[in-house]
Image 1 (tube, rainbow, N blue to C red):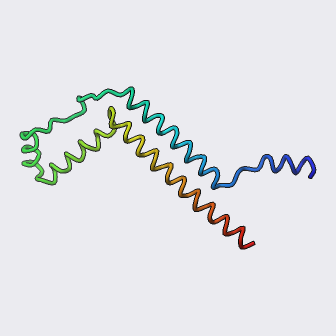
Image 2 (spheres, rainbow, N blue to C red; image 1 turned 90 degrees about the vertical axis):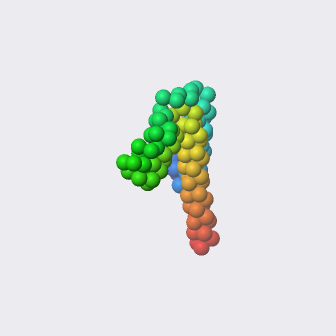
Image 3 (cartoon, rainbow, N blue to C red; image 1 turned 180 degrees about the vertical axis):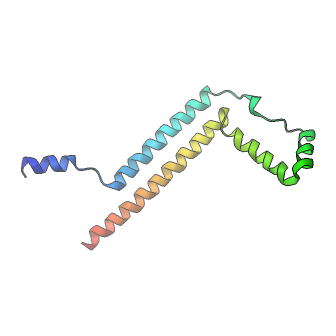
Length: 120
């Protein structure tokens, strides 16, 4: 093998499925580290909570009905996921999900490549 062929093979990129595996690992590690740091450094700040007493619920129901009360509660819950310690759990969940998607894509691509190699 001459020198030019060696350099060309050395510069060749790894297969796509390996890049997806590595990307999934990076997403998982960075996401979990950031989730741990967020959990350790975050404080439980109650300033983000909107008044949710009976009077507030009564006024919302009077204006918009039961569906409005459910929408307000959903909005409060969803908004609480992005502040304080719950943000750490949100980050962990999203990073695990994204890593799993990368791993599944890589697995699918590796199976496709193995079938292509068997056919040749």
